[in-house]
Each structure stands twice: as C-alpha cells, then as structure tokens.
Image 1 (tube, rainbow, N blue to C red):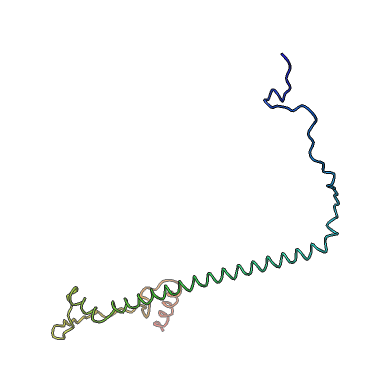
Image 2 (tube, one colour; image 1 turned 90 degrees about the horizontal axis):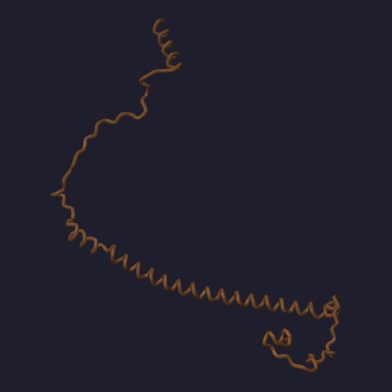
Amino acid sequence: MAQQSPALRAGRRTRTGPAIRPPSLAWVRIDVHPFAWLRAYPLVAPTLLIALCALMYMLQVNQGQMLDFQLSALEAQQTQLNGAYAQDAARMDSLVSCERVCAIAAQRLHMDHPNLTSALWITVELPPSIPLVPQRPVFHTGPLSWIENALDTIGKSL
C-alpha cells in the first residue's frame, strides 16, 4: 500500500502545482516610529479639545432634557394630588357636618339633646388629703436625730 500524505489522510485534497501566494503588498510601507505622534501633536490637541467640548455640551443638553422631563412629571403629580386633596376636603366637610353628626347620634346611638329636667346630679365627697411631705419626720434615726434629742434633753433639764 502506498503511503499517503497527512493532508490526504485527513480527507483534504491538495492541489499540485505552483504554490499560491497572496497578492503582493510591496506598495505597503511598514514604517514604525515610536514618536511619530509628535509630528501630529498640533492637530491632535485641538481635535481632542473639540471632542471634549462636544461631549460636555451633549451631557449638558441631556441633563437639561432629563430635568425638563422630571419637572413635567412632578407637575402632573402635583395636579393629581391637588385633585385628590380637593376630593378629601369635600368628603371631610360632609362627614363633619353638624346635621350628619346629630342624625347619627340620634339614630344609631340613641342620644337626645340634653334636658335639665332629666339630668342626674351627683355630689362627691372626698376625704381630706394627706400632705405628701410631712412637716417633721415621724421616725428620727441617725446622728442628726441623736444630736437633736440630746439638745432637747439638755434644754428641758435647764
């Protein structure tokens, strides 16, 4: 058996003949200079400055648009809350009205207007109150009471 090339064993066909070469790139000049940007510096600085100014302007415009959007949303919310407040104020006025309170008191709670003939008077007598701080302590203890007792005893003996 004849020995096959690895390309044929893998199932690939090979072309016999001259090798295919990519088109000639002789017109491309590969010229690498690490400090070539120094020659273009007078153009790079204004370009970067213009790009930075344009970016800042776009950010400012975007921020202004966002603030306008937020302002319109807050105005819509304020209008909605003012309407809800007006409805709540009208509901409160109807709930607190004197006619409604009197009707509920008479119908549900079975209350009547006060009448002096049916009023019940109660007289309460309280015992006299005991003073919270006595004038003189009842029990005398400690060195101060001993000195007072000694002075009282001496005063009585004289």
